[in-house]
Structures are given as C-alpha cells and as structure tokens.
Image: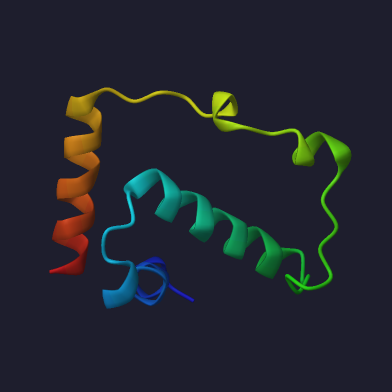
Length: 77
C-alpha cells in the first residue's frame, strides 16, 4: 500500500484531528507488521515495549511541527 493511501485510510474524517506524530507512529506500526507478515491480533509486545512512554520520542520544535503539518496537508490536497 502506498504511503498516501495509508495516510488517507488512517486519517479519515472521524480522526481528522489526529496529530502528525501519532499518524506517523500508526503508519510505521502498520508497515512493520505488514513487512513481518504478522497480523495485529498475533503480535505480542515484549516487556520492554510495555514500559515505553512518550520519553522515547524525540521532541520537535513548533516550527518543525508546522512544516510537517504543511507537508502532510500538501500530500492530501
């Protein structure tokens, strides 16, 4: 599935307010599961994964977030 199609399917009208980091994470997970040929119902997270929290993500500046939103909007237009 192409990236733009994934974005469109994931970020539909019901989830239009989804922010870019969450959208990116969801798409990354979908692609990883697809690549490994694993269904989401079969996936078993490790103990390390269960301890993850927001501190594992890099923080982006407001300017970077604005650029990412503009890029995403451009892709969807």
